[in-house]
Length: 112
Image 1 (cartoon, rainbow, N blue to C red):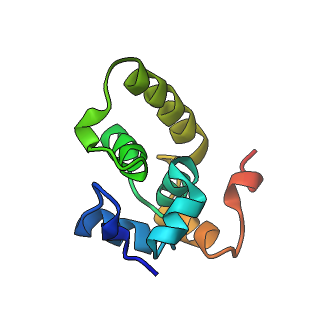
Image 2 (cartoon, rainbow, N blue to C red):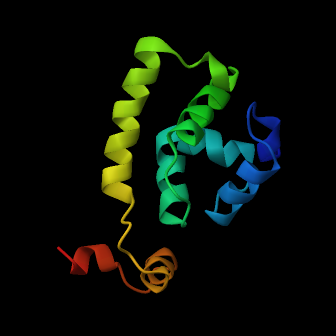
C-alpha cells in the first residue's frame, strides 16, 4: 500500500488530517475520490478550506496545486460550497461530532 504522501500535493500535515479521517493509504484516497474524501475530512473535524479542497483535486490528477485556475477553479468552488453546506455544521459541538464520527448516533438526523 502506497503512502498518502506519494500523491502529489499531499505533505505530512495533509496526510495526518486524512489519516485522522480514516483515509490511510493512497489507494484508499484514489478509491474515494476527492469529493468523498473531503466530506470525510469535514466529518472528521477538519475546518473547511477551499484551497485544501482544490489541492486534493489537483493532486489526484497528478497536477500541481497552483494549476487550478479560471473556469475550472470556479466550478470547483461551486462544488466546495455545496459540500461545505451539506457536511459542515459550525454549530455542532465537539461531542456531537465525535459521537457522529464513531457511529453512536447520527445527530444530524435528529436535528432535522
